[in-house]
Amino acid sequence: MKKNLNTKLYLLFAIFLGLLTGSCSDSFFDQQAGDRMTPDKHYKSYTDALVSMEGAITPLRKTMPNLIMIDGLRSDQMEVTSNADAYLKAINQHDFTADNPYLNASDYYKVIIDLNEILANVDQVPYYDRDFTQNQLHYFKGAVIGQRSWVYFNLLKLYGKAAYIKDNMTKLPESLVTNMMEKDVLIDTLINQLLPVIFDPKTDIHVEEQFSSHYVNPKALLGELYLEKRDYPNAVKYIKMGLESYANKLEQYKVDKTYSLIAWKNIFLNGDQGSLNLGRPGGQAGSAGPMGSAEIMGVIPFNRNEAQDNPLPDFMMYSKQYLVKPTQLLVDSFKNQVQLLGVIGDIYRGIGVSIDTAANGDYYIKKYSVDLAEPTSSDIILERATDLHLLLAEALNRSGDSKTALILLNDGFNAVTAKPSTYAQWSGNIGVRGRVYLKTRVVPIYLPASVIPDYVEDLIMDERSLELAFEGKRWFDLVRVANRRNDPAYLANKVAAKFAGKPEYNAIKAKLMNKANWYLPMK
Image (cartoon, rainbow, N blue to C red):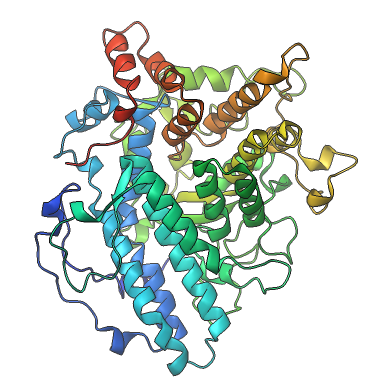
């Protein structure tokens, strides 16, 4: 059952600059700034700063369910049911209009503005609260910059560009368009902002995670940005560094047996298991680690008991609105996996867990209703260990180390007798497929060396599709790989396949052969 979260703590600093509504256009800034708590009266203590940090992400309770729906319908993982509204049907057909509420980007910018306000004022806290040291301030700001970078990164992945907002909007800009930055340029900007707040694990204290109750790991995010930039050595360096957070707990974030076999579904029972760390810096947030989990690194929390309902279970459950369902492609992929002893089916992640069947045989998405007692209290995961393991495998493979990539994909370093020195502390790692007892994926001996990177990458992407189904990752994965290979057909063929035998198949495929259609329009 969900723990109660203190709504007042979340809302104390969630007083936004105004009601920023509509899609990404100049009209986004038409309204005047609203009232807000004055910073000189608010930033007096560590708790004030932390409550501000938690409150700043509240708009993501609206954006993240929309992102999950957009990702699933644009990719090969979801399709609409007859209950879906016209807006969802349009997304499924890759038709986008300015009035589609699922595509509204304003809440992303609300988060950025509030995070900017924290960064503009948090430096004063140590002068009032001497227990909040300059060292802790440094890593607190690193967590805020990390979350802001995550928001920008998602805007870039959705739109291909984003409006760069330099401050906390005490004065409204005349035009949003003049602030637009293209994807490659803004990624470089985000990297340059993150690098100064990434600590050296050999010399610094691991304190920045204390300020990340629901935030992404800055080091891992930096690695993702490098992966998008195709700087694979740095992607490996920083994603691995993120997975090695909390050095005093060596198996933290390393896909160990904690969630193996039948326990895999427990990842989604209560993502935010740790209580909020609202005490002094250094306090413990949960008995099993800062997120109360060896898997979860960041979530957007929901709680039915405090009127913070996650709408996804209602959208997906057969007994509720049932607006979307898994594609037959994904269902078949789960069904066709092979267990180590030859049993057919991804039995620990597939039917009964990520997806299920109704009495009449229709499939529905179950991942957000594993806890049937309180399904609308399901958290939405921003970042988790297995996601990063597979991103690390992707970066390793593109760096020329397909062997280590396959270790992470399959049975992990626990099965390796002579571990590389850089993975000496990964003895508990049992691999992504090993954790759910699936047959090892190997490279056929007849393949020429020139095609091995693409082959291994295909294995990794297939695994990400299964492991991370309906978590908002699939469309971005397809775009990233298709861009890397300069092969629009890679994406177009996979997405169009869910329309096989339907009249729209050729039109969808033709539309997706144009890279310009991979990004949502800026209206």
